[in-house]
Image (cartoon, rainbow, N blue to C red):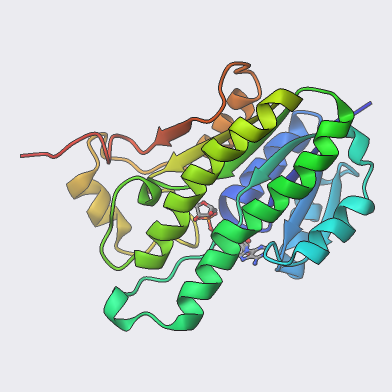
Length: 239
Ligand SMILES: NC(=O)c1ccc[n+]([C@@H]2O[C@H](COP(=O)([O-])OP(=O)(O)OC[C@H]3O[C@@H](n4cnc5c(N)ncnc54)[C@H](O)[C@@H]3O)[C@@H](O)[C@H]2O)c1
């Protein structure tokens, strides 16, 4: 019987690539997103019945509990906390809404998802994996990214703490920290930044990140780690 994987933020970008790849790998994918139309488009791309769409907000724990009660959670083996938002504002011009929404989606969402799915996964008594899509902005500071960096730095630490709590239940928890990846979130001028600052001179693709997700399912001793996938962006300074 197929295993279930939940992917949040599955309507676009990396989440979409991860969802499609996991369907190809044989999972039944529960695709979560705020964007209902985007989920419909994803469903058309899968072309089969291995996708369950769940339209809702990752920052709403009631939605998450309801969603889990509607799937066969005894077969849940993988959660990818990928949904995220980002403003590009200096702390001097940030609004309360920017701060609160960024923390709610990027940090509270993964917290609620890990708590609720962790409870369900523990009951399965099977090896399970949770992947949190953080960012290099959770490891080093970037200008005009105060709320985003805070949320992603929090997510890296949340990953480590959750890995400690969930290890006795055979649930691994890993963060991945992409650098530049070509999606709707990437600014138009990103390619000039990549040329200037990225040692390998290239950004990642959503499929590169999907590959990392699949690889992590095969790494039985990886837990509590923050794996950097940034073409060398944070490796050091170029003189
Ligand atoms: N693109 C990059 O360069 C980059 C780099 C590092 C990390 N990341 C992280 O990767 C993840 C995916 O980013 P992306 O580039 O694919 O972005 P994207 O904007 O293309 O996709 C984000 C998805 O999340 C969904 N979403 C937003 N708020 C939501 C909510 N409250 N509830 C449910 N769904 C919601 C959106 O509808 C969208 O489908 C994010 O967590 C982002 O912070 C992106």
